[in-house]
Image 1 (cartoon, chains in turn cyan, red):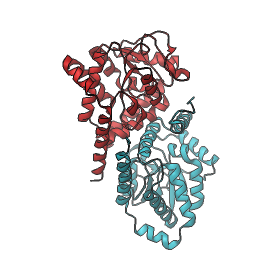
Image 2 (cartoon, chains in turn cyan, red):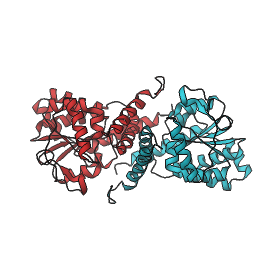
Image 3 (tube, chains in turn cyan, purple):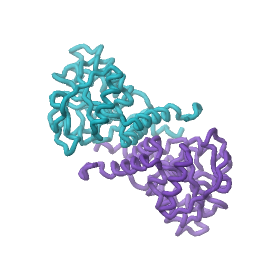
Image 4 (cartoon, helix red, strand yellow):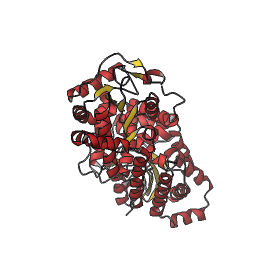
Length: 243
Length: 243
């Protein structure tokens, strides 16, 4: 029991939620540490959506809506933190949803699929094949899902897989709080924001973007600019940190 | 199995080790997320011991050696990451070691005590009493350990407990990679460094400090300066992050 008067109550409650999902097998234990990394960077951007992150979310909406076949790749952390937000984004964007795990077992795939379905997500099913150029189970995906997609939204992704998807010629959109990560730097578009803030921002943009605006956002996409803006936010916050 | 050619191999292996200790009950699941936070800040200081962190470690050695009764407070993460380093520091400093947990159960106390003893640590035993001004089990400590100490080294501590120990009039030394945390700002002395680098630095200083040097280090302790120096390191690294 975390006392309610603890100054970091909200953050500790989020950790407890992830820990509970880890006990149930939805979240990999390694995913808990990855979540902690995100928390640290979120602290540094002030735990709010910056102007540049909002621009990135709008550009993501434009890419999803303009895609031939958009797929949202969901892992354990994403399902634990944002199953409801994934359902809303699927509804608004028309994207397919595929469960794709770094620590892959049939049991975890089934658990996460059920959790998503309970929150209204329609989840692709089928037989995974090793289509992504990576060793072991990390190369597995559905031929009719990520295998066929031209645009993939992969929140909280591993750098290796992000790079492999890019090599397959896919446009990769990621949500990553660390603007220095290999994922952030390898993706076509990086939204430096916390997942439960970022996904609703994309969903909201899907509902309002005009077709001409979509084209302009895609044409002016500059991921290095977006990363630099996030880094500048962090530096600025560090200047005033001890005041 | 993490492929050896993964660019973040070392960091992922450390996470796997913590995850294994979590499965065994040594590390609390919430401790995995806390570890991740540390990883993020370690990345920002370049995963090396800075000049200011070395000064902090030398000052910590001076405080431990000059104490009437120094106690090292060990939690699950500290035991999992640095049992051997705690043994060496106990040997060099003469400090007592007490197991003190945020997520306290008798079973975890026993597990962690055994892990420490296997690595050569002499662990205080006795009946814990609520001497620290905090609710629930978080206020428990040994009367002949932390309860009696004038100097307490508490690596990876929670901000609440750090503050409560300060209120009891104790000098608190902490090891915390986040220079903005309440722990870092509340402690008497904060070493902004990764635990398995920081503890050996204190141990090495214990062996070499002259008595006069000890007094000078303690007299010139300025924790705000040390935190500012760590923050400046991080800002500097962010400037060059995308090069």
